[in-house]
Image (cartoon, rainbow, N blue to C red; front, side, top):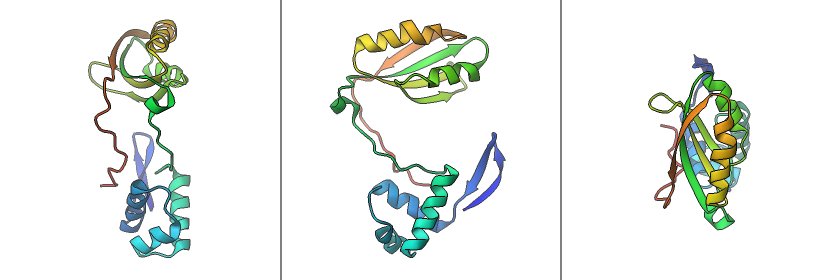
Length: 160
């Protein structure tokens, strides 16, 4: 793993083929042992442990459990396009504090910010939008895209 110059304020990390292979193994099964990963990628258990530690410490990757919100009682998921008048970064920071927001990006195009939210009900989604989101300084308009069915969600796109 080599950290190069910065891109958009973030360090750019170049991964060697072994680190890429480790990430792909973890994307396939984040619970597998370092020994099993080592066998798959041609490294010792200790070398895999070291590389995984560096990848985690650098922020290149995270190892997390992905849940199905519907099975946990969160019946409403939505994507919200948000237009901002004023400081987009300040608005994004405020919106990012909402517990319902699980994904938040500043974008170019017809929306300044796009937020994915997970709520327990339509009433909770309404309260989030009407009582909290629209009161964030700078929020001028929102457009909500409610999820009817989750057709595809993957986290194993690799390292290309």
